[in-house]
Length: 332
Ligand code: AMP
Picture 1 (cartoon, helix red, strand yellow):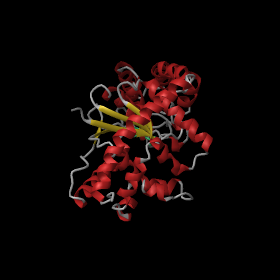
Picture 2: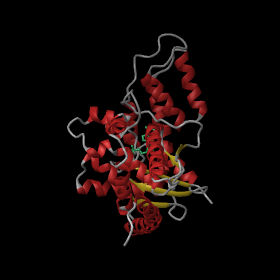
Picture 3: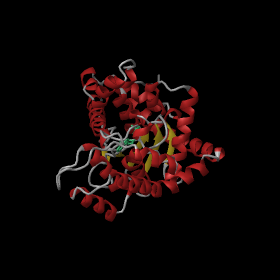
């Protein structure tokens, strides 16, 4: 029997290169080898209080973009998280055995306290239990995610194992992070520090749907410095980030060429950024064109979402029946 895979992306806007290389590119490859469930994490996105119109629009974007990237609804189950309320039920059960101390220690929670101090809600605190429910509801063993999600996966294993021990069962297998490359991927942003992330603003991200003009503008504004002053000096974070992006989208020869210029203190950042932008455009264009085409076909989107919800619900219901039985919810 094929191993089960689950992963999802929060609909908080359009997908960026971080989502693509950290997650979606693996989804596309995995669908042929595994029993895959790919969802749109709209329940997770409620922590940021989107308006109803924005929420629906963002869900639609992610659905279109999943399809445009090559996730095939005939090969894998694509669904919207809120269409499967069994996930919320399992989240409730797992929350009963998730402790304040461990939830408060999560790095992503600490980051959120810093970045949105006026909205530190219980959903943020329990984000790892909802993610655990997403994965455990399908008894997944592999989870294609970026490096930023490693700690959440560890917590998922803790919650699943705790449930198993408490009810003396082996209901939940242990899930592990998965990436086809040797290491989990972290795609840097354009602001000179940290990862590409929607929460750092649109200027920090290259979206799959960005037009060539927008890409040129964003890359030209990427943070750099005064240039190297000593041969073969180590690159500061902002410059290393741009080289890391070039490694992702450009041919190796191009990367080596600019690396050599940097080491010889002969690099011109203007030329370097122009090349990076053009290579990003070459990469993005076919996906952007598909996004534009699929976005027009509402009937197709409805069909994919409806059929995906049915398949995901059927599988989730089996797990919930077993969990209820173990917990002691029995019919008279
Ligand atoms: P999110 O946008 O936080 O819901 O993330 C959705 C998926 O994209 C997760 O699997 C993340 O690990 C992945 N991801 C998001 N940003 C990055 C990044 N900058 N580098 C690598 N993976 C990322």
